Image 1 (cartoon, rainbow, N blue to C red):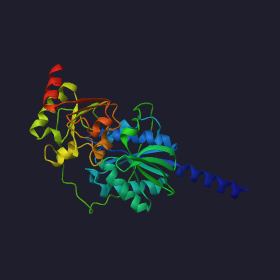
Image 2 (cartoon, helix red, strand yellow; image 1 turned 30 degrees about the vertical axis):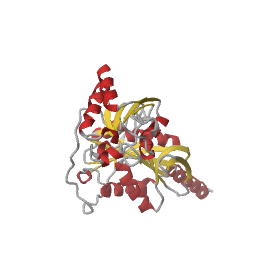
Image 3 (cartoon, rainbow, N blue to C red; image 1 turned 90 degrees about the vertical axis):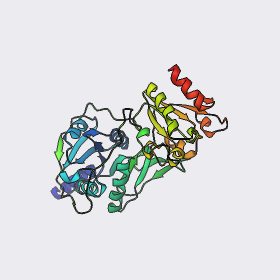
Image 4 (cartoon, rainbow, N blue to C red; image 1 turned 180 degrees about the vertical axis):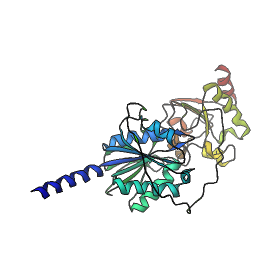
Length: 329
């Protein structure tokens, strides 16, 4: 009788531990990336106990911020000088070690360059299929994502024991950094220092808001004809306190750098205001901005596809319209 009861207790404990979600925190310059807070919201919709993990060379400040997030019951901190730069070859083994210890049912990160480089490695090691860029959660094993550049919506039921997910930040509201009380717990892991080496990074600096988190965005396309003409957008953006983006056509033409690209193969954003200037509206671009709250389009071609998704459209010569708008603002 005693052994049967003990067996039931052990089985119950294992089941409880297995029905839990690991959220991978992303950070830079001691600041938590907003994509992580969206991932926490997604984890809440899964409905299981939430554990967050912070890995890095110096992540005390990030861990302190994450500990305040409501709904997080456990906070693991893997701090090692070898994790500087968050190289995926070094971070993935840390996540696998955490999973081996706690046996999570879900592993979630934001659908950022970091999440998309780390989680596929984790999924490969676990021999499961990663599910990328999800926009909705219907059940712990059923997820919604867009396919064909956002032209179709796929509902997917995952049968793998461990669900490895990246979530689209624009589809999940960031979790509130309040009401949490998770105490940081150190996670000791032997980091592989031979697979790769972090040398450094060069980041572009701008006084304007960051493109993925800006409330207002002004983007330019091939209609601007040259990189010098983007100065028109910079002046308008300064009046709107907006970030500046670009279509792939403008980037491919060499008008601006690729870190400004908005679209399926660029950055996916959902600002309160999106102003598309000289952008025709190819489906690849629409996939990156169609969830914006208000879309304003300026194009001299009345048949441009961008007008099909725009809330406000102006058929005009951008070289006249944009300076006039800037002056009136």
